[in-house]
Image 1 (cartoon, helix red, strand yellow):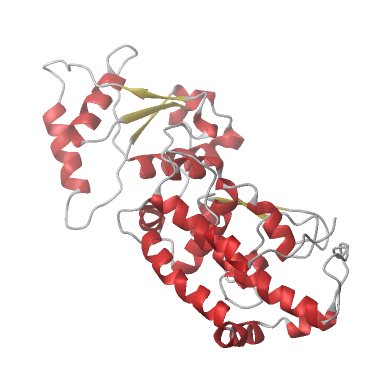
Image 2 (spheres, one colour):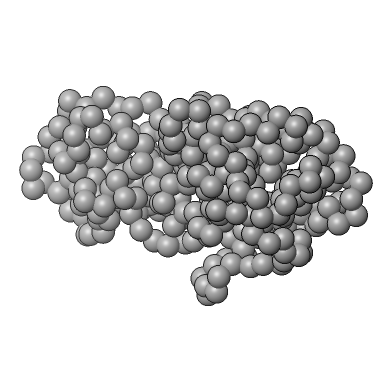
Length: 327
């Protein structure tokens, strides 16, 4: 594979998503931000490549090859100095402010997921990079180009660090909410290769406002509609207790246990109480979850419940033996 012929720098900035009527302004802004940062990084690298006298059509480096001369000149300090001195680069970089204001809209989905999982700015940047490639897979080729490597057509921590101007080294650790909540997956690509990062498919669909179950929950979960309760059921008392707990001065997570014989209406009572609290009920059959898969299924269920504001009802005989994961 060879490098493509250089195109106008402005073309990357002006390019938009493929025609989709349901793509929101927020998603479009997120893609434009990634492409703008990529165009800046590309222009800087092509400046270095031209200065070292390499023809634009030379082959990409093979795995493991190190260009020490280029590496020394491709320092974050040198790139930042160029961003400030080059008219096009400085103007393009300044244009990101308007785009980032759209992305930072408190009512937007990105800010919602940031609040729900306690994601900071640096973590949000990495999520945006992975999300951009998930939303527009053609950007995978851009990742390969920016890493000067045919096999690295994916986001890496080092690539993201340079795109968002965090320096050479990664600023994201395994304790990050992105990895703990599996919003982003990390895949081993072999000895000496950086790990490939990818946005979880459910998170991508959620950003696109596609109503769907998390893939992990498809065969074991269903929404349960509220029905008319029996007069003897303690609906009002239950609703009052739950609201007092979750709407108090110091809101807390809670687990509400409903016990009873088979066929006594436990799920119906749970759905009725949940509806009164303002939360649809997602019922998950724990008996269909292997013990080894239990922590992951629990995490994905909690994640969907938080993002879509659903109460989770775990049912099944195995629940009396399950340990509750700490998420």
